[in-house]
Length: 356
Image (tube, rainbow, N blue to C red; front, side, top):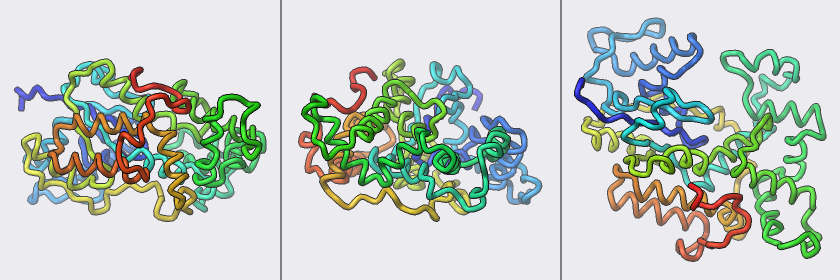
């Protein structure tokens, strides 16, 4: 529609299903920098919304049917992920921010599995750092967990080696969190390894200082809700908020399309789910202890508050869905209420929500 004034910026928070979204929205093809990947994307995109009289094939996409393309796909005109905004003007000129969201603790569990050297696909096991450097700019590149595996294998003094020496599982990381709440080194419990406490401090502070550098382990932990909201709602607080939840991505997509004036019938997840090979991951982020779950949620309490703000402001959620999501926000953390979870004076978060 030539008179359409709505412009949606898709804010792809890491480990929330954003890669899957890129396969079903027009912006996913428009923002690909590699021409080969862009061509492949357009073929898949056209195949989803092709006219029946012009069926798509693997080598040639069918004629795109505008009537079949979801309204949501037409309205998403910008994409923000990691350190890239395309087009850059979308940050300041979008009428809506569409956040991909996931419970902060689940997001961190996914992050931990994603970076684990044990989850590097076997086809990369013979890869060394020289091959990695040659392939860094390749079409597919080398997965993050394989870069971590290489660092751990080749350099015992690397940040990745030190991190996984201290924290072989997320449960062990959660056990170390109370050490950050002790006021001084002299009063720290000797059961906490000071080097591992330092590793955890570095991880926590990465959220405030964006110390991601060349450390593959920090990326999606540091680039969190705080990172994305500082660059969107903090500067443009009156922008309309929309959200898609990882755990109910397909129903949310359909409901959002209807919310925007579409039919909600064009989405199909057949063959489009992007998993980063996670179905074969060894689960080092499984959490059994309620006390450790609470520790991790205390570490993430500001992230939980920012998630809460997005859910409360999302105009595409009805009251039932909003209440269900907010209830799960605390119950998944083994707390009975937000008041029980929230500590206004938290010494370990690394930043304060008032900065957002």
